[in-house]
Length: 634
Ligand code: ACM
Image 1 (cartoon, helix red, strand yellow):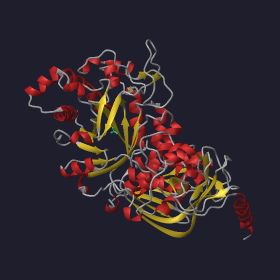
Image 2 (cartoon, helix red, strand yellow; image 1 turned 30 degrees about the vertical axis):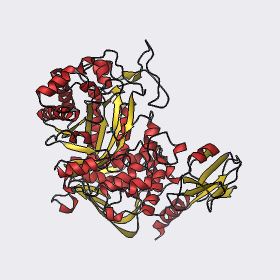
Image 3 (tube, protein in one colour; image 1 turned 180 degrees about the vertical axis):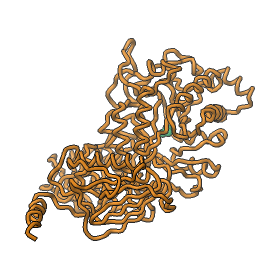
Image 4 (cartoon, helix red, strand yellow; image 1 turned 90 degrees about the horizontal axis):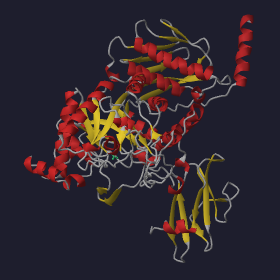
């Protein structure tokens, strides 16, 4: 007995110095089955990680975990072949419940066991394990004030959909290679397994193509502009195109491997025949106008949108579908792309293709007549079919935005539904594979809170709307739904922190729809977990949006002609404090309990959200003019 006394004392002293934890389980996405036990497993310096001999995948996953633990705790856990306290092991006999990506995770007071049929399953089990540890596990500096406990639990998990994606647009703004890796690491935590890389558009061509060097020598660079994308000033005569960048083929191979190590496939997108201004700045002969003055667009307004999906482009940004040179070009481009990306699909865009230049060109018209092509949609379908053949000739499958359903079907091609869900429903009835990424709900560039404090944008998708949405839209044939993805277009997103602010927490909601059992959806429980992940992001140095705390503000007029401000919140437990007298709002001022009847001469209304006694949202300021504009009849 005597010998144990100092150890006992040490534990008591240690417990007194470290933080205590509520031991709540806050996994995102919610696993399929979680059975909670009593007590905890404690990870210490002497914990070991076991991987059976010759299981290279298990070894990779173990190394990933050991690395994260080292970073946060300073512990250098030994990796052993047998008898590890934490064990990762591939099943010797397939466990059919787990499929290709599922896992089991058993935590007892003395051991942690992760089993799966595949490396991907082990990786996801490891991500879940990290999320069971205290939030400080995300720390980039060593924390010696933390007791590294894991709740006793038994988890069986398996994803709902095979395609769980996030798209990043690197054309509107270029994000360097190192940041792409960080972004991939972030989405890997949430068990996303597809990274859709939007590599080309009007504002920059970002992938080195050795057969066409001017694509990056010219197409990757534009004149620098800071401001609201879409209303920037055009290039001035002689102004140097210094803003941009591109990925070399070596960079791409490196990123593909990096993603593969995290069980993420990369879907490359070369957006044609529209959205091609950067390519045309380099090779103007590829469009019907052959306009040598075309430049890489720095975010000027070059189109008019008439509503109902109708638009006009004032600068030609469309490849010529009647020119064999275009198909020779695409054969080389898709050939090089196919050799760089091992994923089975290549995305060819196909969206928002303006047909006006085609329609006004006599050679195009003659071609259409000769080939019995009746209109621009059918001409684009002709182009799509040619591209499909090229992509298939490189042993890849084609996927395109839902415009590829217009003017004729492309047999065997998959469809990404973005103009709402209708393209997805239609494609599923045509027995084409479908990925659901409907705007505005799955568009991560949409505003997520009070419009006056978000980046200006044309539509909104608040977190609760994203969370409650299901990709299996009414009428869809689910047999053909591969899964879904969130899309981050970057017109208004020039920096990494802004990319993260727009991605999180909405990507959590998307991850949950794509991975978890929809019957388990529970908004209050989700919000609790989101807040735990906000804490994790604080340690990880990842930005996120707190817009979920901001009120929804509606304004009406009462019978006496006064403005009436009505506020609701997305989540429970938010207190709103406001002022009408120009003071900066905080908890010493008015607490919102009922609609505010605004006295006549008020100039400025301000409001801020509190949660558990702390300001959490942004201060929102609305002038009398803005309040008046917001009036709507209830
Ligand atoms: C798209 O948002 N144009 C696919």
